[in-house]
Length: 313
Length: 117
Image (cartoon, rainbow over all chains, first blue to last red; front, side, top):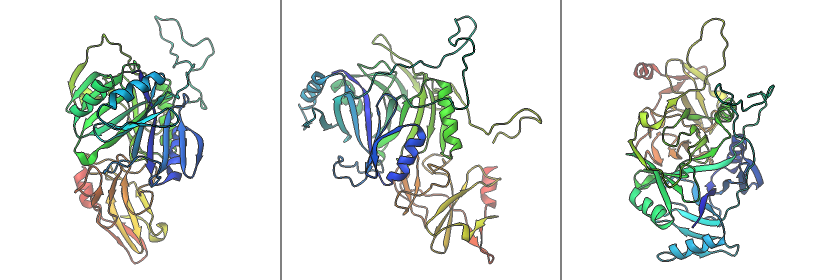
């Protein structure tokens, strides 16, 4: 069952206007959005869908504060949908929709949909670096940064879920759907990637009590660390609230910068994540500040040398 | 210290104020003619975490509760108690506020400043 990754995350929100403003400022492109919500997509077509909390077409909400209503997974082709329907149909209802997609519920109550992936193939350069010892990646007179440079989210990267039972979650996603564990932060949870995706993780679980079940954060891939910091800095300047970052994680190696959001979950810009194959042996480290990042930076107001560095705030 | 004037805060509005001595903002929420003050620090994390999703955006969509926009926790405006979300049973740190006779909103931050040091 060739699951590639999450195509869409669907939320039932209590303020469509606020979420529309936020998702647009974050760098996602509204597609057919009106006051009943709609899709906000990254450059490859993956993204976030918002609807009003009371929308009758949404799956039932979890009995917690979370606004996440469904995770939509993209697979390679229709035969993968058949394989998933057969496997999960062994012990739960799998609804087949007229458009060829299927809907069901995982072992923790999260609503899932599977579709032939709607993501578009991207063909754009990664961040280009000049360094001694290797051929220059930028030609002469080609700039690394300029004031109006684009910094748009390219692809939905991953989701992190609060779950009451990690073993149940792992058994479902790994044993039933073929995800593999790439690394584990002991005391927090495992990083998972689906078989047909070589990114370090598209899913991460954190164990919490039942009343916290939901989504901790979601992340979008940027084209490199500079795009990530440029996008995050513009976002801070526009008044949005930074939570953690910018920094670089150890497991996954990806750059990160998390922000609060009116969707009741953190939004992350990430970049330059490790890729793995089936030869990879999963690592373990105890969860804590040391294991969580290689380094951590803090955005600050611009200054220029002239009278000393000024206060850190 | 005076954070702002009562006239600067609409009924049902919330705003955050940077205060020099402490490292979290102070949230003021107005309900009719009463003003409630809280530290902008969600109790979900040990050191508290800033709760707005944008400058001054501290309320839920309906405007009925204070909300933490990290994981969606909701807090009663008049008591600061968490009524839904990860910090159920905990509450926001109250900041004593009173309205002086000139219409200025005064916050008592002495104890918070000591705790911050």
